[in-house]
Length: 511
Image (cartoon, rainbow, N blue to C red):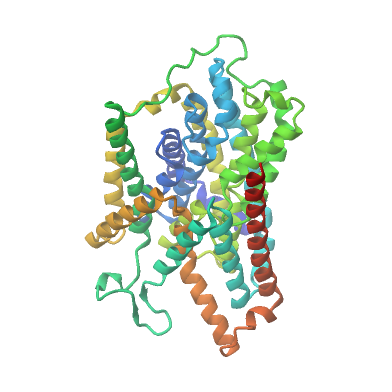
């Protein structure tokens, strides 16, 4: 283990890897800080370019984009009450009121500190849990694997979306798209309609870029057009009428005394975020919201929440950043992405010919420890760049929207073409962009679709293996303890969730 650790660290500690990790963090912060762009969009747009990088450099860049974007989303949330990323929504509750008091620097520094510390702690949890989970994973067979994937898919479809029906439809569409191409067992074409380019199925890059990046361009064009039509002017921009920063001593930094008061909240929120992160499909927004609610209940001054509480900012940022490390546990040990960001990182592994799973730690131990080292390196860069960029954050939101989305469109076309040098893939990107726009317009969950697409082929493969092992007997999923356990858990989660929804509707009706 020590030898693999040292080898992994030596693989990372090169100027090339440092440079790409730093570039990823810087770009991620900028994307997260610009309303309308997100950390996910940054990963989507730059994922194709990692094809030309070494495995470590490519992964370093992707992790930097994720970590930088996660903090970057708090910048417009604090300065303009506009969350740069969905998980930064809760940061608005106390960040913006504190900025209105002339203490934007204090709020941003608190967000940066909570983000980096919680993220680093969650990375330690990943490191300590990855090996034990991998050992258990080595002892499971196709039936157990099938039910674990099934559990993940159901969680993603039902629990991670506001409307379970729309979540199920999105997930079902993702699974349907996963079967396009050649049948892995019989080598016969499926749903290709005689198009040779579709024999290998849909290429990952153009599909994801279209669904998550180009569809957002179309949505923003629609919003801009409707605002012009209704108001006869451009859409209202962010509120830039913040008071000038206070010049009182200590008003722009976090003092030692203030830090000591938020330590319990930081630890509690890190624990909540980490627990949420282990469960596939729940996500950073849930971690942030749950942490905030519990912090308010446990606070000695709950009345300060919503008025500029440092505890509130800490809970939100620690809760959403602590999800990051544990979310990679099912990825590196089982090959199952816990959320959309992990699914995109899985895509980065696959581009390099690497397939995370139960034997990944055995066959690529040094590479796994290199990944762990990259995580800590990205945290250091996030803190350093965050400190440097905080004084200039106000200017990021003034970028012209037409110029911004023209750039996104150009990157989308380049990214779709670059992986296979195929104009067909560019057409696929445009097609999925229109599909993503329509689905988002009717409130279908795009991340559920993408993650289901990632898991679809693996699920089909494991189910077929299980049926082959049992000689066509489907009861194999009931006779194996682990697979039965996950099947029961899946049913239990669905029943509990539907019961809660029905109970909530009954309460609303009674009121």
